[in-house]
Picture 1: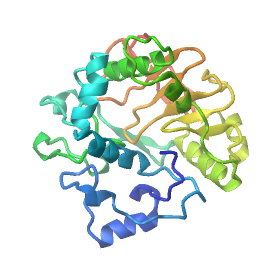
Picture 2: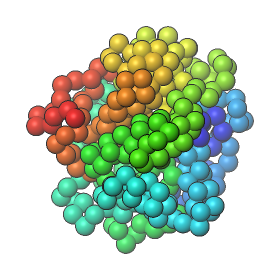
Picture 3: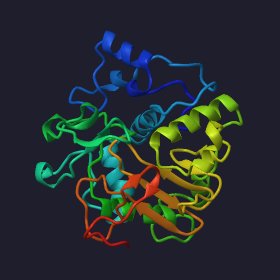
Picture 4: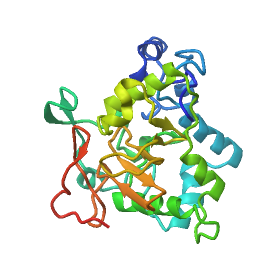
Length: 288
């Protein structure tokens, strides 16, 4: 789950992409997904590099095998249900076409004009009848920004041993914000390169590509020094392919949910990032 495993996504590795194409392996988010979608060879020797990969997807399969539940069932029973969340699911709602936020990109990346993406990203589908187990542990959920913010709030509350909804044990909560990567200059350089591509980090934390002040925990990108744009030291962040940006700051007790979700609900914070700097709140959206 900390990404030095050698197992990676096709969009991160030309070798992996060529292997998937040559062997006609179905897309893990597509309508023909199967366990075969995750059986790809190592892109590098484990422990020698850092590359965002499918460790979290395999963790999802382990949860399903051990619990005897699909991820849809497990998440509903152990996460969404206890949090009072009803609108996050691997199956898009029937009104998805009209309520889903449009996805866009910039061409060239980060600097060019905004371009509307006409099809579902990464080979996924909005057809409920074509979405089935095995579900991905690394993506594929549909939901609202408000519901995701509710989830993040409960994650934050797990720091307290007497939390009403204990999603995580307090010791596990601390582990989320612990840098688990070794002090290997090659791995740190790989991490900094990914951070530069995300284009939303304080450049001072990247230390000219050495990655000295950034880290990676079990699923969260960590800034080890305070960012000049507000995130405290040892806060955790992630963005996702659909730009579902969020961060959790255990020092301040603040969680922020971005706007790339199915529909934007007033009461949820929405930022546009330009050259790494958080811009103004979108019209009509108020901070929590």
